[in-house]
Image 1 (cartoon, one colour):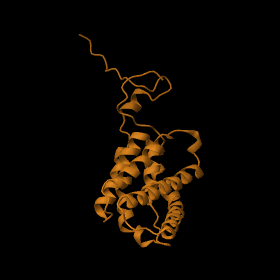
Image 2 (image 1 turned 90 degrees about the vertical axis):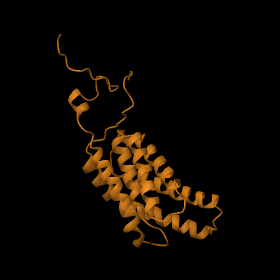
Image 3 (image 1 turned 180 degrees about the vertical axis):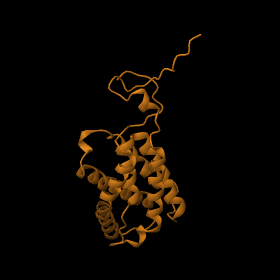
Length: 196
């Protein structure tokens, strides 16, 4: 009886990672660290940085950065986890709504993982601005569904201020995330075999 090394089945194809790269840990500890730190910063420090009732959203920048670096599955899971941490640590009143919004943001950013269009600095920052707009608009929609009174002028002022402030914190968050996670690499553990 001969002892052969186990066969590694990958959907990466001939240009994909080698067997040694497949076996290495994908730095998911860093993803967890980034998401927990961003969520805690979001509920502890960011409310004190308020302009026109708008608050910078560090978590949306972190979720976008994780999605861009690790793919749609990791981006979606990190967005949902970060959203639940924010909802459980601050009185938002809509359990699950923010988690769903951040999940969508992480999944959408993850769909762009490894694309050349998002390698520079400007496209990820613009993606953070769009993601913050989606989260703010979704939160307003959730508040309207709960029949909470909202004034249009305040909503627009808060939305614009939040988007602008998020753009200011996006660059350092993206830089730290890229440094911790390394090169973009999509992690899809449910893909066992396939043709590319």
